[in-house]
Amino acid sequence: MIDVVMPQMGESIVEGTLTKWLKKPGDRVERDEPLFEISTDKVDTEVPSPAAGTLAEVLVQEGQTVPINTVVARIDESGAARVATPREEPAVQAAAPVEAAAPEPAKPAVEAAPEVEEPAAAEAVGPLSPLVRRMLREHNLDPRLIKGTGAGGRITKQDVEAYLAARAQAAAAAAPPETPAAAPPPSARPEAPAPPETPPSPPEAAPLPRPEAAKVRIEPMSIMRQKIAEHMIMSRRTSAHVTTIHRVDMTRVARMRERYKAEIQQRYGFSLTYLPFITRAAAQALRAYPLLNASIDGTNIVYHNEINIGIAVALENGLIVPVIRNADEKSVIGLQRAIVDLATRARSRQLKPDEVQGGTFSITNFGSYGSLTGTPIINQPQVAILGVGVVEKAPVVVDDDKIAIRSVCLLSLSFDHRLIDGALADQFMLKIKSVLENWSEEVL
Image (tube, rainbow, N blue to C red):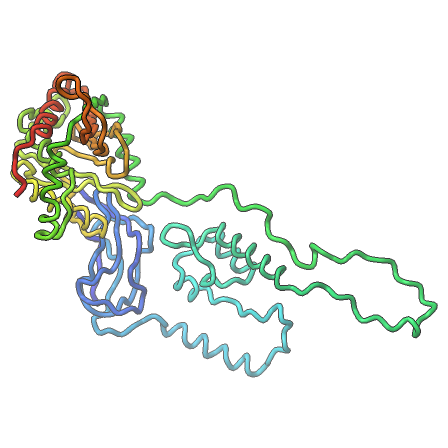
């Protein structure tokens, strides 16, 4: 029997939250096959199985936070599944003779639906809250027929209510209109007075669903979202945020990109975007103004000799900032390759903890979603972050007061005013602007 433990995902990590089991007890797993997902304050990732065999026992449930090296499951290398334990089988066998000895009379159609075996149902749909379990018991529902909208596909109270309302509505639609019972012909009972007219029993025969859906839906934040919220509030409390915005003429870069993008796509298999050009310009500016590549430790300034630029990557349920190390030593092609690689592995939860640590400066590209500009929050313990707006064509006044069409982008720099003054921040931005507007470096 092999113990599966909560791994240490980085030197500073002391605990992790098990967010999802990818296998169920009794399932066959291969060595290095993803077994479960964890979330820490640095990264969300999948944890591979340490051995091949059968997942015999799960000791930590989804949503639990445990210290590193805690045993979360056990794998039976012999491959013997232990889903149905010996204690369960005799109980089922013992119940069979009793039912055979005293068969119950036929039950009405209303009771025809068998009661759901709660453990088996829970195993099929994941953990259920006590409230949801009670509602399922009261209405004799099979949770496997209900689509969960909660975190990880869990069934919520609103899901059960919506299912009941839909079922009632379907029953009301399918029910045939009530026809009065066949009355004897008038000749048989000529003198019998007609019974008083009774209106057809409408609503009580088939209860109508609730006229409107619930006004709110409540579900817990993911671990990643909780950590993002904590870090944003902490950054706002820590740094004195100031933002400066500069307009940059990206026409030279746009022409360079247009000239080479088809060849780069064919040769390397990825598209050439504006982001590696801006990252390259930022790396040169950081080398010229090292204070923006520093951090604050109490009353000390920590100057970093390496330029490690973090690139913000939007995920389905949050944001992560993987780091390009020694970014000033990479070409535009090398930076594009690193950006594509880190973004792809971030979205597939394959980043390593050290790939989201050690950044000295950050770039966030909200222009990819059409935003003109923004005021990003500094990624602690850094002292500045560059925001990139959309690159779009616009009329611009050029030399001799002529109006020309240019590819224009707005770059915003949020900086920590405790260390960076406005003049230095603008000099830094002018350096980036100069590199981009006078681009001369060949891409290939």
